Image 1 (cartoon, rainbow, N blue to C red):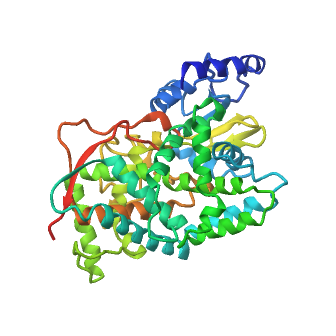
Image 2: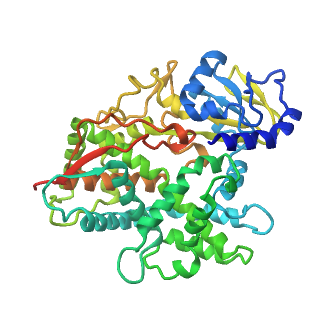
Amino acid sequence: MSPLLLLLLGLLSLLLCLLRRRNRRHGEPPLIRGVIPYIGKALQFGKDAHRFLEDHRKKYGDIFTVHIAGRYMTFIMDPLMYPSIIKQGRQLDFHEFSNKVAPFTFGYPPVINGKFPGLKEQIKRSFNLLQGDGLKSLTESMMGNLILLFRQDHLREGGSWKSSSMFEFCFTIMFEATFLTLYGGPPAGCRHSGMGPLREDFLKFDSMFPLLIAQIPIWLLGRTKAIRKKLINYFLLHRMSRWSNTSQFIKLRAELFEQYDTLSDVDKAAHHFAILWASVGNTAPATFWATYYLVSHPEALEAVHQEIHSVLRLSDMEFSSDRDITMSRDQLEKLLYLESAINESLRLSSASTNIRVAQEDFSLRLDTERSVSVRKGDIIALYPQSMHLDPEIYEEPQTFRFDRYVQDGKEKTDFYKGGQKLKYYLMPFGSGSTMCPGRFFALNEIKQFLCLLLLYFDLELEEGQSRATLDPSRAGLGVLLPATDVRFRYRLRKV
């Protein structure tokens, strides 16, 4: 965030913040305000959220309230208390926050006002198509699109080593394959033209995403408004109506939006763009991290490679580089070590914040012995990265162990804190009723990408470079990006 932007924000909010300066009341958690009006502790939190929260936990205990960008956030740091927060539905609500922030970020009107009766509920129901039979169809389509892109862009290159930037490689494939799977392809040909510029605009918008989520006015963010407009216009009806093989999920949403005359064509397009970001914004970096950790741990790479071949042989399928391989949903579910490796990479790279908004002043019960007073409008926040990196829960938490979530040939689910088994021990997709509805599709996408990559290619990191590190600028918003890209080599396997 630029110094000029900080100055403007400070001047605009100085008087208001001074008039509304908050003091701690009896029964409330310790209060950490910060010295900059409105900003509070936002800069320190954004620089390294995990360290910031751990330092304050050591000083104030497991529960404390922090002033961040105009909001008061009460962090619950003990994962044994998570169930009390997650099951608290009436007085703590997630949708109040999302219903305000998502329209601001993606440029469509809030759907909860009287202009759109029933729209919010119907949008929620549409996500059922990302599960069950809908998930099966999406998984099959994604596999076909991944094969298409691999065949046309990478499997014609012969057996010599090729060099590439790993994040760019992963993002390019996952972006286009996901786009084709959800929205379909052009009327003639199987791939859209102009994917490169669209992808670049997406990345430019994504770089500003943390500031938009913080509700920084878009006119303060350079060309972000113009870039968002270009991205939204890509999904206008006259364009989408010509695409074929569109998923049932997107078809249903398009039909739903047509029922509301109060939604403009641009509003409808903005909703479609929001789904693109939701489908790629975290999945693509998650794919990078899973790929990076496997390639940087040869023993893990080989174990997962052998597991994929074993699952194929169970279905009487032998891999051959000259024919297309499909992995069904049932086959993907049998890949325990691959799923464990993906979950382990998510544990190390995800930094989401699970939030609820207090609907009234009340006493929040945390366990049999403790409760705290919270105020209406305050945010109650869980920050699972602190749990993911807790050495009491995960031995050597900074170390990648591809088999950490496998035990005796089954998924391992028993992790402990203070001698008590944790109900929640891995939370990259949120929690409770607010869990990401597309999480099953996302995991299948990553599995499919890795299956193809490991089956068709030998993979190596290039020598002479530092290990990949996390860029903390998206802390609180999902999977973190790498601070710098990583160079790697790949060549066709000799099969």
